[in-house]
Image 1 (tube, helix red, strand yellow):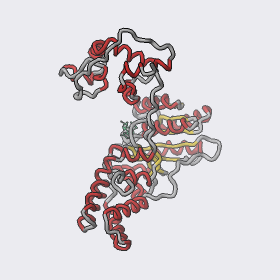
Image 2 (cartoon, helix red, strand yellow):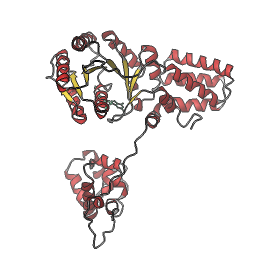
Image 3 (cartoon, rainbow, N blue to C red):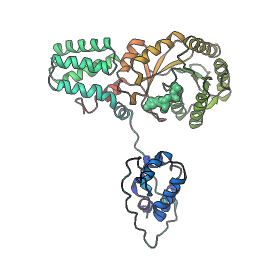
Image 4 (spheres, rainbow, N blue to C red):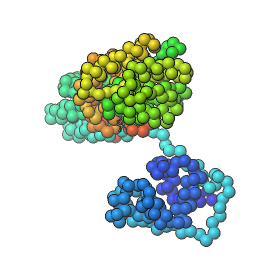
Amino acid sequence: MPDLAAHLIGPHLLDPSLIAATGLDADPILIAAVGLIIAVFGGGFLAVSRRRGGGSKDDGADEAGTGGSTSTDLLDRPGEAPEAPPLPEIPETIEIPDTPEAIAPPLPVPEELTLAERFRQRLGRTRNVLGSSVAELFGRGVTEEAWEGLEEALITADVGVTASLEIVEELKRRSREEGATTGEAVLELLKQELRQALETPDRSLARATDDGPTVWLITGVNGTGKTTTIGKLAAVESREGRTVTLAAADTFRAAAAEQLGVWAERTGAQLVRKDEGADPAAVAYESYDAAISHGSELLIVDTAGRLHNKRQLMDELGKVKRVLEKQAGPLEETLLVLDATTGQNGIAQAQAFLEAVEVTGIALTKLDGSSKGGIVVAVQRELGLPVKLVGLGEEIDDLAPFDPELFVDGLFAGIADED
Ligand code: GDP
């Protein structure tokens, strides 16, 4: 009997990722009840609700006659709608279980990805550019052509021209001296070189040593992922039991404060915001007081990032920082958010911020969507700043402390010898 819900709903609908995709993650009993309705009334009910209700993204499929009336169609992507599977046969009498556990057995807990798995999974694009091509090149032997190809692959992955040339020179020297004559041996040396290029004394996020709240100021060009990174950070921190205040000191875009408000709600953080156009420094000032009265251990301050007016941006950022420092003393972190998909351009952007404020570390976002993950090397080298955090996706859990070991392993996962 515990399998009744699975039988009625179908195992695919009990898949938590699909349930999450449909928004039906509220209550296992509700899911079972919905399954029952699907089974009894079949697709007709759902077809009607689709035509009447939202789901405009799917309307085209409906009109094309590919959309359908069965429960599975709702979960398929548009354009991929298969033929409607036959409805399950309904027995004449159904024994209704009376305990909640029997009606809706607990959903399987989704498998948590370890950090290593997350790096491996999300670095696929850079791996295609770097790992795979390098493996292919050296698969044919350690030749001059392969070295040139490696140089090219490193540059394409945005490691930076100078760094790429230096890495290859060093590899050539080592492979001669250490007798690395196979592709595998060269790959191993390359991994070592990359790890070394990423070495930095300290990547941890600093915290206040006195009673006052820790203050992290977050800067970066609009669109790089500042707000999302702040939200993810707030999630990690509140999960670890810290109370958090978020300050919406980007007062140029009302949407920025609203977006931050959504994250505050999701993570249980306190939000401090003012009207659009208010003085960002005033928001910062008030947020520090609010953090103290709220008993927050951490204050994260969002800032504007409009590059088209560099002078104003610098003045404003400088002022926000000064105001906060008057209250709090030196800020524990001033993080610059860079978008990995912009590659070397991100480094040029970074320079403008470095002129405005003293940055303590980099949060590199969208590594999952970039084939230019080598930018991590370039950022550390050219800006002389540690990459402290990396964004590996858009979801709340997709922020990770940067770990060179896992990063390099991720770049060559399935290619290098250990796999
Ligand atoms: P802001 O203007 O700098 O505050 O940028 P937002 O936080 O609004 O982010 C801009 C877009 O980038 C949004 O669509 C985010 O979901 C997306 N984004 C942010 N971080 C990541 C990441 O690590 N990976 C991916 N794939 N998208 C991200």
